[in-house]
Every structure is written in C-alpha cells, then in structure tokens.
Length: 328
Image: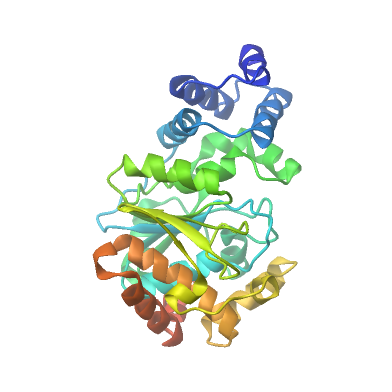
C-alpha cells in the first residue's frame, strides 16, 4: 500500500488491474485502518479515472454474493454524497416503477452522508433484510420489487464500513454503489453527484448491454430535483432539459427537503405513498420514476413514461407494492 499511496500522492493514477487488486486487498483486510483511510481520502481530493472506476467496480462484483433473477430487473438509485439531504426520492420512485409494471431489484444501504438512506427507511417500517435469493424471488413475485441491503451482498466490505461511517462524508464507494448491484440488472436509472461522474458512468455504461439513464441536476443533486436544469446520458446520447420542458414545475430546495431524523424521513415517505404528499413532492417522485421507466423502454418516449409513473403513484398502486414488500 505504501507504494500505491506514493504513486497517488505524486498525482499518478492506477491502471484498471491495479485498482481492481487494491480493492480486493483492501476488502479482504490486507491493509490496516490507517492505510485504508489514507487510500479513501486521496479520492476525496482528486477525481477517479475511468480505469480506476472500472477496476474498483470489477473487484466489487467479483467479491459480491450474486442474486440472479429471470425477470429483466431494474435498479433505481443515486450515488448519494450530494450533501442535499432530500427526502427518499429514489426509494419512493422504486415503488412507483414496480407499480407501473417494471420489476425492480433495489440495491441500497444506510445513509452515510445523509440522515436516512433506503435501508434506514425500510428498516424503520420493519422490513427484514435478507440475502436469501429464493426469498428475494418471492418478493419479486409478490410485490414486483425486492430490496438488497448492500452489506449482506458485499461481505468483504465489512473492513471498510466502520471507516466510512466514522468519516461521514462521500468517498469513492458512493461512486461505486449503483454499479455493483448483485442482481446485475439489465435496466438502470442512476443519479450521480457531479457532471464529471455522470460522463464517466455514461462512458462505462455505453460499453455494457444495459438500458440506462445516468442523470445529474446541474445545481448539484444526484436526482432530478426540478430545482433547475438537469442533464442525462442514455443509450442514444445525452440531453439537457429544464423542468418546464417535461411539463413539470420549478421547485425550491425547501420543497424536497428530507427529514432531520429517520423518523421524520419515514413520515414524509409514507405521506407521499398514501397520497398526502405535496404537489412538489409528488412531482419530484413522478419525474424520477418516469425517467426510470423511460430508461427501460426508451422507444416509448419520456412523456408516456411520466404518465405511467403519475398513474402508479396517484392510484395507490405504489403503496400496495410497498405493503406487499414490507408486510410479507
């Protein structure tokens, strides 16, 4: 590790294979906590390269417990780490997408740089995490959605988890999260915290067989915040849109602010699912869910996908999916 750190401190980057091997060694406890912290800290101060990102991704997928499904599953998630503390937009969007007929294999974790991640909110409602693939298949059959709590599928990361928690800020593991879904989804909506990372993701995903949309709101959100323009990269190119371009209102940060605690976040979550959300909250969820549906069926057009998302939320079908998942 000393040699690797010296190379990085000298502003050199790692090859794809070196990055893969370093992460394997790091995950399997070869390095001490101080070395691990130093390595993670480097990437808070400089950008990760395409080769490094690919190498880190390959290592994580190599080490994970896979969960393969017959259905063409989709993941809907953000990297986190945007520091905005919005309500759980991507988690809510996942239930809307499932209710609209697209099977979802949601990959998530506890919040690291936010008050409440997807795992926090589902655990609050009594959901029991599992890496039993047969049980996850039953969830998909019953609710059209299953949830995979990342630590159960990436056990090698147990050496890193305490350090991430103590640091409490985004690290390159935030960048990796959406890329290392153990279900290997063929369809994916990913929100990222910077435009540079969106471009890198777009480049990497172009070289896969996934149907995808990678998006970033230009004022810093890892989702479509509707607070300004957003850019997205997809199988056929890239596009820059304003909320008005898709018939959505322009929102302010206060409109989509999350709770300060898990309890507050869970309350907002249920209000929206139960049809008691504000117009602004509903718009944010419908837009992100619509973009996810579009990612999986790009030939149908974005407006059609937004209509399907609106119906899935407002009809109560998304709430039914949630109940079927959590109360099973």
